[in-house]
Image 1: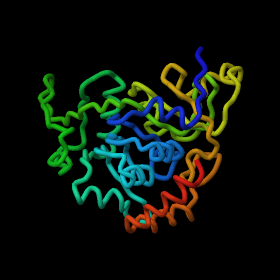
Image 2: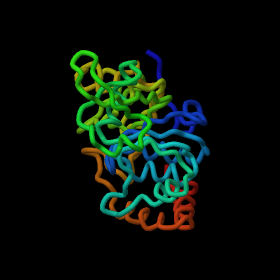
Image 3: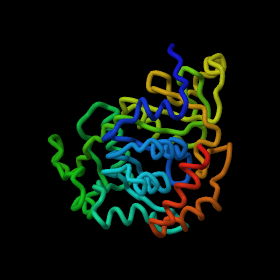
Image 4: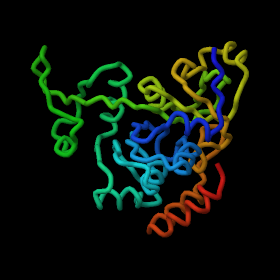
Length: 271
């Protein structure tokens, strides 16, 4: 097996390119790959198409920093802290393309890509106004039963970014708690970059293979970044930093506040 340990700077520089479709791991304030998000901003990656289900600070920060041309999503929100204002401003001003989904259709779009299919059918969205605004969803008729279904277009990521709990140097990944859609995202993508809390020995991976969530064949680079999900949470390691998230939610109320936040925490701050 090939060793896949890289620095944060090397992983982003080598494997995230302008115009890429980037699937972003985690949900809400849970295990978002924030260290990777900050490094993408520092390196000035542009014209990205970002993909996720229920997203928050990660999407909002990338959009506010000018890295994004298109977003595929079911929800972008700061949850109890209010609106994701960078997302709202850019969406209202037409500066980003919106590919609006429901939660189940985002997951289905990734699953279709992971299966190598152009689309998958879905029940449960007929009658939704999402079909009126989304170009990724179309009503179809089952050729076998005549039943009306919704076809969900596959979204094929060029690269998936994930924060996980443990990995060995070869890229065998362990996720604790809910994996959300992160395993599907790794399967679907051409490349996957995973930041982890801990690097463990390959012997430990081999001793309990059932704990491996994503095997090395789906992983392009592993980066050791303790607290790499901060200020979001990482199950059994740390909770979401509510005070910091509140500070961010206040900062994004206007572009000047957001720029000051970037200077303090991204360009001059921690990884």
